[in-house]
Image (tube, rainbow, N blue to C red):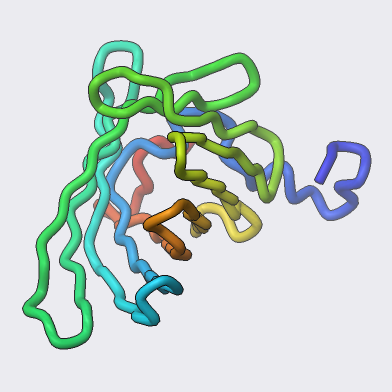
Length: 161
């Protein structure tokens, strides 16, 4: 979507930068592993915590796979303000990908030879938002879809204007 083709004002409901993500979000994730003909799901939360010039993305989930006990998982990234984007880095500072701002469905690709990680963000229902990863490589072929819903705190959303 571009600004000229926005007759309903959807851009006013898109995240404008880091501050729009600050706070705690519930997440629900579906994972479809095509290579192993298996699917699973995860539930959890992610906290976006201000840290110097960035937001720390701290995720805690419980993954459920057929025939296995629930598996706890964590993941962390650093989100930084970029020029018209949010730059995402691994927690050790290595670049991962960028989210262009002002779009309802921004896309990015991260190449980690021999694997390819393609992502599409979905901000069409902001502040409810989604992320879909398509991952492929010699030993990987899966789709991971995650939906984020902000947790309410005393009736006010953190980072809201």
